[in-house]
Image 1 (cartoon, rainbow over the protein chains, first blue to last red):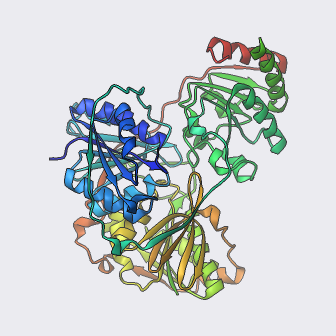
Image 2: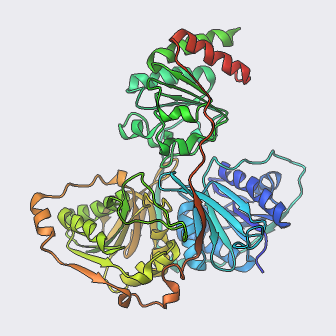
Length: 337
Length: 259
């Protein structure tokens, strides 16, 4: 009998990744509906002290796999560790972050376990049995397809564990509660090193010094209407006043003006800040898929028929290159008051 | 060096048609292209061929029309093309697809298998790693650079923070980013030649698996329903001068307690 909602609690260099906390938040909701527990799988090396953080964010149990083999993320090492846990514990659900680690690990596990996997989910629910075509208590995994044009709700077709990767930035983490109690379980895995064929030579960090756009409270996002590097300097000035981050549509990334990690949209990142400025962004469906869940959207665009205005809470028909510097000046004055 | 590149034909359009009964996509009548990451994968293979010499086989699973992208692969410089096609493969999710392709690949010799990171129709990025698992091969995904040194592959993998350099001995499976390998154009001579070459057509006889593992039946997931997103109610749109626009934005930010 498969039981409990598991989360692969991704850490990098000992730091629990935000997506892991988001997954715990969603897992908590799902587990409460199912009447089951939330279990975090924490795999890495010398990371056992991070288990309490996972409990504070909603885990009932934390299974810690602490081994030198898991110092850095490498597919086979992590697959062996997580496979061993899943194979023995028979989870009902396992969730992974849909990033370069989760999207590498989860399909490998899916094939090893011979179970289905749904990628890049943006919504997870438990069926209530009201539809005769779908039994109760199944995980309903909704995801965008075809560049966000179409949403599909997927369910597992085989008995046993139900697995999904979930887009970072979509689910909400719970408030941290240091008083929550949970069990920390140390778990030993016997590795088969004969399968370790990939060697990590070097990890290089791009000099970013910037907040990840999925974590920003305010985003000033620019598109084709901003046009050039100088235009983005104006957005950066506005962002500085508001303590915001600058992001971009795909067009500006393809043009080489903005780096890929700043891209919002179906092939970039999904964001849901408190405030999203869409500056000179027309609003292709692929872009909207990445930002329409933002709390407040203010769009400025020359074209009054731009589709961005269909999702904006406030739309201004005008020239961004004129409005942005004026807005920056004005906000500077307002905030000095 | 023998390289096999897995490619897929995908619809290049925003027009979507869904079979309302099965919830699966109707691909007929929609213009199609070689999936961009797969084209990057083919380019990566051809760059190895240019530098070190290699025999490059492309394989695609799909309907007979997928012949088109195999011709394109020939025109870019592939040496052999295989179309894996059959009714039995229809309606497959990533798990069933990966089983089918992996079983077909067992008919070939390879030192390296390259696939695109993900296809633009599904964006799952799952089939490559799943094939690697079925074949017992090491995998590296998100590949943006590739060299050969002392018989080993030196691979650049993109990550959220930057990149990693990894080393792997063949045979291995890599999933490639289009941004890492800007694909070459088809040569005019190549296009002409492409239509004189043979595309091998493989059916279910080349896939040594029970039929229950293929297509819809072999899938680990199923589409419960699909739908288009409802449109959010639009807010007010103002056509005002820049001064008034600034006033409006500032008052909105105050109203929402942002400033």
